[in-house]
Every structure is written in C-alpha cells, then in structure tokens.
Image (cartoon, rainbow, N blue to C red; front, side):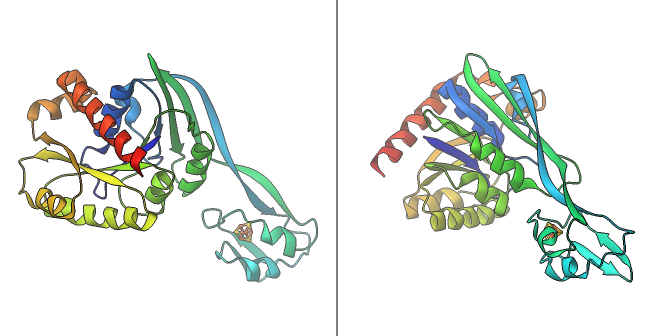
Length: 280
Ligand code: SF4
C-alpha cells in the first residue's frame, strides 16, 4: 500500500505528518520525494548505508573542427543549442538529454557524457523503516530525473510512505501518481484552503482517494472542516496550534517525541486508510 503525503501550500507540516505515519507503521519504506529540499532525515535520523549518484547523458560538441552544428540547433526543441557564426553555444540547464542532436549533427562530432544531477541516499531507521532520500544537486533542474530513480526503488510489498514536494506542480504529481491513497496536509487559513482545493483537483484527476489533516488548528476558521464535511471528505486529525510542537520541531523531534499519544492516533489513521484502500 502506497500512501503519499502532500500539501498544496508549503510549511503546513507535511513532513511532520509523513514521519508520524512512518513511525506509527513501524515497518515500512519511507521515501523523501521532496528532492529540492529533503528534510525528513532530520526527524527520522536514518543510519545512511549507501549513497548513489544520479547522472544524465548530455551532449558535448567537438568544436574547432570546421563542423556545422546548425542542424543540432534547429532540431533542439528546448533551445539548448545555439549556433552563432562559427561558434556553438550549449546551455546544459535547458538540455533534456534526448540525444537528438547526436543523431542529426555531423557524424562523430557530437558525443555524449555523463553529468551528475544529484544523489539517492539509502538507510535504515530502527527497527524497520527502509529510508530513501533523493537530493537534487544545487543548480540542477532535473527534479523528475531523481524522482524517476526513486520510483524504481519503490517496494510495493509492504507499506510505503511518500513525503511529496509541496505545491501542485509536476514534481508533486510524480510523487503521488502511484499512490493508493494521499493524505493532504493543510492549515486553516485562506492560503491553506485555496492550495488544498487545487491539490484535491489534481488527485480527483488522477483518481487517487484522499483525506485531510488540518494542522495548526485554531489559527484560522473552520471553513476547511465545513467544506470537507459537505463533500464527504475524511478529516483524519486536527493537530492543535501548539508552541510546544513548534519548539520540538525546531529541535528535530517528532510529534510522538513530543506526546506519545500521537503514535496511537496515527496508527488509527493508518487503519482507516487501509480500510478505504481495501474497498476501492
Ligand atoms: S540532447 Fe536533446 S535536449 Fe539536449 S541539446 Fe541535444 S537535442 Fe537538445
């Protein structure tokens, strides 16, 4: 069973909820898909056993040989190649590694090389959480390349908890698209509500069932709760706005570290999700 944890708005406590679900499950695979800013390891404190570099193929041009690379520039859909006079200019950050310029360019004058775009860390959180984290290299825009690599490592035999990136863009879709269920974390503010509605639209389109966690309850109004009630959307838990939780978070502590009662509460959420997934 794959459970993703997502949030249209950043800073709502998505990672706190994802980590709490993983700890409540005890034995599971936890994947930090938020590859631009992974931070679940601060709370889960995995023992990292292995780090694997992720590369993409990129072309390089043998210049100064009198070759004409204008066909490469014409072909490149992403404008990663420009020919100015006799010069060829390559913009690696625009290149998608399709290899087309190698096929259409002068024979042997466009070659391929590996370029590092990030890494995957693999570790263990005792007693039984297999931890995976994608980490995009600063300056790289190949978020989905790292996420594709994580997808290949999904272990569908047990429970998988995915910490998705914030927002509702491609990288969020990549993170949630294989889920059996998605937990949407929000806060009771107009921004939280607005971004929650967009996330719901994404999940409706993908036909993925979902429920809601309202974090920092008490800072706004009850519009989200009312909306969920009217639409028959499950609100799994409301987590009070609590200075003690915020202080624990800033020290790298989990909700269960702050108050052990959260372990049982999240175990109950997991049971609820399991029931929902089984009847789908
Ligand atoms: S590999 Fe594809 S995307 Fe990259 S420069 Fe060549 S044609 Fe453009």
